[in-house]
Picture (cartoon, rainbow, N blue to C red):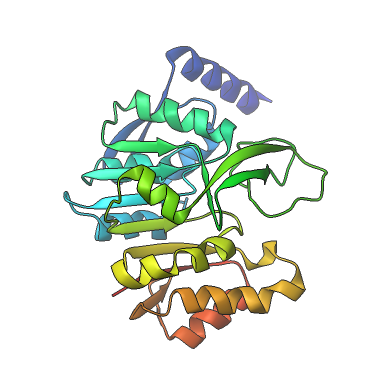
Length: 258
């Protein structure tokens, strides 16, 4: 009871202040006070440690980073402090509002946010929250069951987004889009083959119906075949066959380079 009371007081205090201070790998950030549990996990290093290490190792002051599935901006904020330019793509309107807030809190000038989804074709799509509300990091273009929150969003093809963004050369890329990666990866196959940005990829095979999984993994691995090196999120080296098997068995994170 006392602990809950103290937490409520802390929440109220940070909301009155207008931000929550957090330090991530030595980088001081001001962040929105409405996701305190998440920001505390980020500060403790328990959220996506492989992603933060990927950004530290992969970015230079001259790099351009694409955050595909930016959510409220943890990777975008961290990367913007380390590289020349960041593109942050987040279609969920609730998450996007907090992303903009967090960029403003940190006076980030080198990040360009886009409230769009990336898909096979340009048009309007339904975004399903996979839960009671939008903004909780689980939103996806995959068809929902009609029991959760959903909204209509603008979806751009990869080519149309590239043109809108000014045809950037992307050096480093994070993709975490809750199952929609199985649509996006084949659509960006040619770009990956020609440019080979360093890629931190979250694969959510369990978001797909069982009968679609084998074909989806085959198409994803075909889109990634140009890469010479694959590692798991612990840094272990994998063959292409081992990576495909890992992705078939469970939701996983893979890192591609070379």
